[in-house]
Length: 405
Image (cartoon, rainbow, N blue to C red; front, side):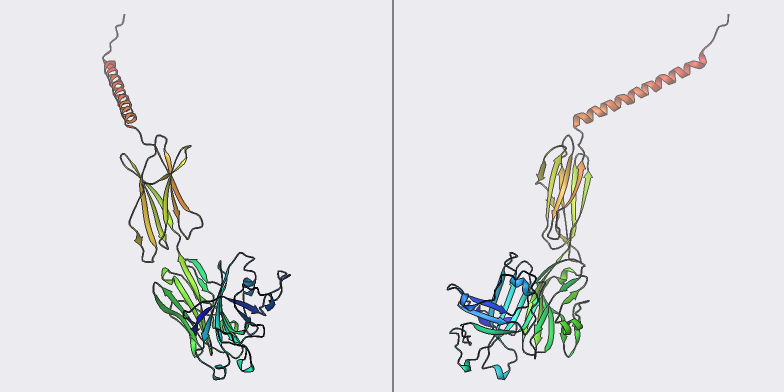
């Protein structure tokens, strides 16, 4: 827990201390996996448990994916939780002196949901309730901090890896307690140290898209609390952190979705035969992001695979679309029996390495070349000699005479 706080949905730093969060009345479907589980009991706390326990009732809002929190340990996932003081943007005078607010950010590892909840304290110091010595908020008779969740914003897609040209659906859902009204929704993109508005919606008018093709379903927004942003035809420029900020008549909070755009490389392997050498060129084109690994393997007939380390690389090239290209080349040594050369490409967009290979024929030796030339020359001379004899015999035929008895 942080002793600092949030004003609206924006964090401020502060000293940290350990705390325990207990979600009560969480809507978890009973599929048989709840057998053997019991409700939290304050008396079961051990001496080494955190000194502050927040009991948060979630009966006023919907909490989707609550089962992901319950079964996280069984699935080998980690749940992180941070609780901070929350200060209202628009204070309600009737509650200023009698209530306090906290915001809780819960994240399930491994691509699990991320949830931000605004909690309002339930105790009443005016009725003699004890106060927490550090937080100065009312305590329950059991020494816990009783609260109710009045607003939550969730994303089920905290991180997305999508291919160039595909469509992205950035999930953002919310739920609020009765009596609260939705006032605005904003989606902003942050990348490379700068940010800009992508889409905005207010109750005063329809949604406005600053990015071509960006859409948000207003019916789903108002009826189901679904503020999912759709981005068609992804480009490299769409990559970044997307902030979904939901504002109500009293509260404001947000979720962040990291969008990573990828483009899979294409490979072409060519062989250039010169007078006394063979040059192999492996061209890798159209990939994103930048990091790519190109390696060479040489294999003789019936021999072992041998890495090749003397390859050279061209300068990096970037297309107008933002994708990259590079070439790697080497002089092949096929040996006396020939060899197969393979170009391996690894990239984050590829599940398995991309490969291209070719067989390089053995190059004739100087001695073999000389013998071949001598043999061919001998055949040529013999052919000329044979033709000469044939012509000579042909000339003698007409001059023959015969004596008759």
